[in-house]
Image (cartoon, rainbow, N blue to C red; front, top):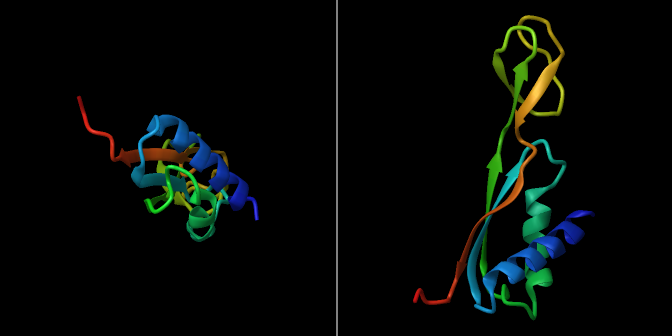
Length: 113
């Protein structure tokens, strides 16, 4: 389960950016084509966050669908896997969405000066 190591990295990155403030909420974007299971990330989050600035924070996961663009006709098509076939018959697709793993937002208890 590589999601545990990924979640540890997410907690480390968020802790660095929180600059010492407790984190209330963290929002992640996870693409459908990443081979990362959002449910596993959610399962690992509480364990990885224990004893850090993220302990008790709410985790939000936004799943981004996969999309590809045909290199022959330029049409954009939905992708459930990192490959596919365009309606024109072409299998040469450029993935344009779905490979993201991004910390989208981080809400802390720090007050603005």
